[in-house]
Length: 352
Image 1: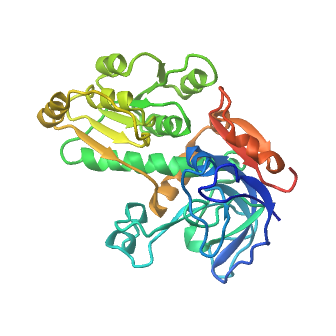
Image 2: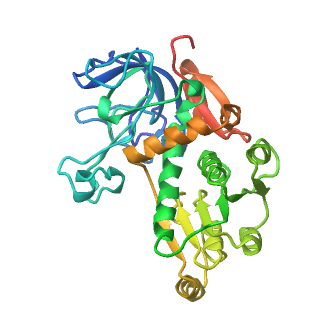
């Protein structure tokens, strides 16, 4: 079968390769792949910035935003042939640390976790793949063409869970949220905010392309002005930060409402210097009981939350996030960004 593979930490090594067909273990599903979402992590691995092949291997099958259909399932499992499924990305570390031992493997303390398509386990970027039944999640059949959005949705489900947990230190009834960044993570964070009944605002620097219309169709408000100006007027109760851009991060932190919560999901590049008034930021956080929390990855609980959120969503709106689809034999094209891209998807089923 064909698969999208890379030699980790070697720029220019991305290619579609022939690999052996998978053989499911007794506790695994055999899955026909349908599609694969491409994100910044995949592009960074393709550029050779990081990534780890399975032990004793030189190449890694890329891809963690999966979508497939079950071909064969163990008799005693809750799955059956024809089910639409996604595979969880992270696996607990083998020790395990306390967090992994309690199912919170997204909070692994010792860094010995592994991840499909990223760290030491082949990903889902092949025409067929296997996944343990304990790390597979069934999707509503309506999501057949958009279900690869599941993994990024898990990221924002966790972010919202973290914001809720922090807020419940005391009385907490948020009304207004600002999402910074209108990429897939930001737009899906806004989807969850709207589902929660919040007054939802999305900030991005672009004025053209599909993003303003996607936000409007969600029933949220789109902004493209400076973050300090926008957040200063809104005084949001919660900010979900999805850009990783330093000025946006600190502009959001400085301009929340009292008892404001900023959840950081974007990863900032290193090597850039930003001048800030650290004393003013500290004073703001302390005197207003504000909180800033980082959030990355997701555990099985968040996958089930994401499946429920997507099942409630407008499928046509979700489809609008997918601005480009490419077949597997041209998969490398998905790694060159286009100005109007929101989410790029690689079609993996045999018809392409």
